[in-house]
Image 1: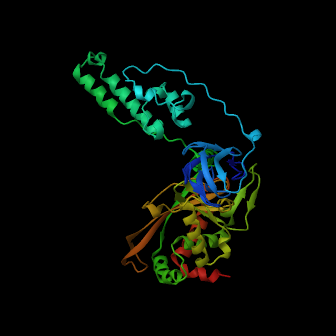
Image 2: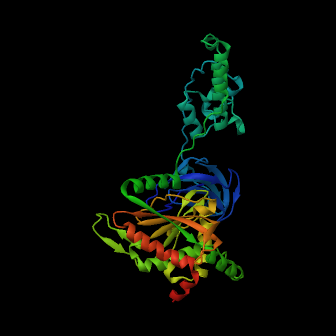
Length: 427
């Protein structure tokens, strides 16, 4: 039997959360077969089998934390020679847990006391044991619904509900002011389902830290405007069949990115960086535009590299790839690095306005709202129907002021309202 040691899965990453096991103990596996999905503080990572064999043990349960360079699972390899007796590690039995007194009002299931595993130990995962300790309970008093009497998290929560209901029905409560009415209120309160507790880990934990750091260290200011995208929508409809013929999904995002890269040429400060001491501005030569994607692992912001050098069709292909990867939670680390400016398309969820937080060390981010058909007056004063999209920029007020942001947004707006003008700048 061999142990699979969790390897380095990213620079600076020392632990990860097990999201989903693709196999169970006793399953046969083949080389490179997906075995488990783990979530780091940067992305969801799929770990595959190093060779063919049979899984004999899963060391870390779903939802628990696995450590880098520690065993993740054990397996019998098909080509592995049996270990010599001298290589076998002696197994020391754990001391049986001390018997605790059951809570007041709780009934003791004799069958649950007699279903202990080897060495008098009730089968349960470390997470369940921690939950039991937090509530001062004993595993021996909780009936297990899992395999071979294994105590599951749901068993502990159900047991706690039963204890609370028993406490609420004691005669002492019936004698409180209000009599039966007070006891009824207490019983209804006890019957309410317990709050679900979910730890903040992985990408969500990183997002929480970074947003707090960004909001507290960067003086934000916001700038909003409306953009008439009637012509842009018409152009996209004409180009969609051509893109689909090449198996490319054409959304508005490639146009937003291309126009933004062109606007950066007029106001390069929006595509810059500040050094650590806030004493220098570093103007970046490449426009790497990030786009916020709502993935199953949390909010991810992959970025398209070198937007200024790509055609709209090439941008559409890259946007499609990054979106699919991010929504699957398997975006590459390289795609998450070195972004220079970000776009959050809240309009995709039906949102109209937002006040975004800058994705440090970038200096600006824009939230794009949904497009709505609204009445507007044309140049001749005639009322007409136009597609209006709201945008809200957030800028780092240490270096970007209102004038810079207004000029930049006007340049970007001009390309989007007259999208054919972007052709004049294609190399």
